[in-house]
Length: 422
Image (cartoon, rainbow, N blue to C red; front, side, top):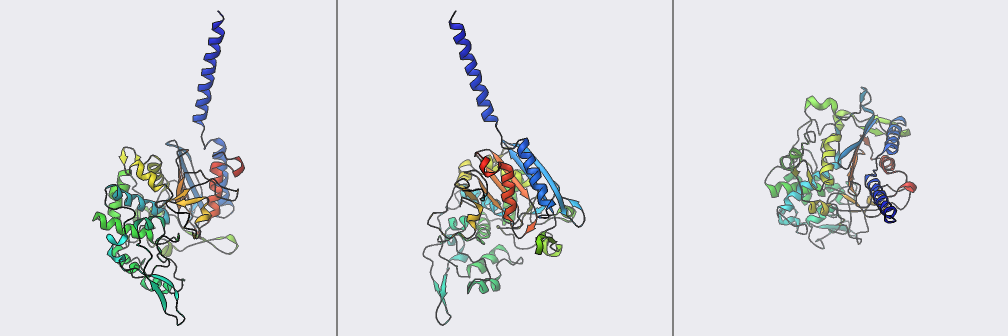
């Protein structure tokens, strides 16, 4: 008879263990407390005048766990920020281009360490600017090594991106490779005629590298870049509102753009300036910027990534390819990284920043080791957190880029630095 109490105790221990395991596995990031924090934070952005309007969408474990919108997509006309508001995502176009490129990588169309000029002869005679002679003549030398496709994907190409730079800047301004009237081929011809500002692989320098990726997609596939992206990514995922050109019938949903002015007030950027690219059809289809999207459309893209390249039965990439994109490719030898360290403890993969270490202080952007992400010039943001199977999309339309918004939004999602157990 003495065995029964022991048996009962064993059963109770098993049940207790199962309950504890269920509690551990069901623990989520976005609960009632986080929801309240996010609401308060987004509302404060509007109430303090930091933005005209903002919205956010978060999925966890494949389910929507948060959505809300505050303020106005168009403050002057009192048009509320909403779930179906269309925004200009600017550099959040880049990860879409990267995915397009990597679909061709999976087909064996190229290798990352192959020279770019193997496929794009426009870049076969590159030179590097190393300063000026005493008489003012430029010092132009051959690159220390070939410019590779990997350089394009991690921003170590050396392409100029600042018209104020010594010698190369005026050449860049005159060549105007990013003129909207250029085709991608004309863009490549003009960019390829300019000197690099450093040797490939030596620095991280944000610029037109992803636009060159778009040329590469076009050349390797034999299809116009925008058609290739539509056929291989956007249409299969049902991303019907991610596009360059917004038709007239949808323009009432296209958010206004605002710019900070003196005293932290906001001034609307005139529509004829802010919306010109997306309300006209142009020859240029850039890989680095230019798309508009909605919260749900971009969340679909993020969900595909967190589910290792597959969503709703559509396999866009293989899991190993997504992992390759979300792996740091930036050597520690690359110490000149411009403003990349402002993103936190990150490296850079294939068109994504990749978080390598947790934040070292409360001042750094919050986040989880292994997350990959990027943002846009009008202060938009998204990230993929594989550890928690969490994806977040954050929309505003504010210039200049305001990293404080991202810092506060991330803290609202994960909790403040001293409370976070990531």
